[in-house]
Length: 153
Image 1 (cartoon, rainbow, N blue to C red):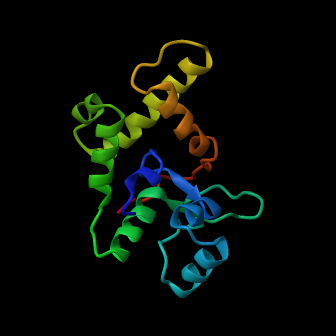
Image 2: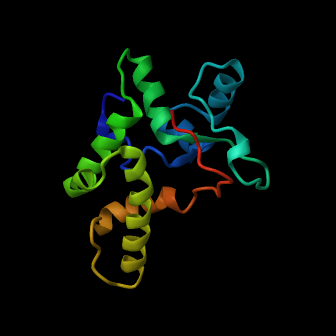
């Protein structure tokens, strides 16, 4: 956590699979599972918010994983701060466009999908660089389908 360059540039409200979260925390998926069972690790997303899939994988909010890691170092990195930092690092105009980070999350997803489609069609993107799209696409393509919005706080 002390090296922010090691954390990928993805929206804090996106979901990570259990193996992805374990890799970011530099632990094995088994360790993450043990922490979850003992109530010691980052909080997983309750399955009632996600459409059932084969094997029922466990997912974590990226922002919650980062907050949990920060707490281990006696730091505080709340979701609102993460969203603000994310918008500023992607494009400072984004932070100015969104009055709240919750509304910004929804609107950013629409902007991301539009830029993603433009890039696939060989057109110039509006807000995201091709490098940013590529980095985020690895996680975007693995986002599970949701039944209902996940409560972030």
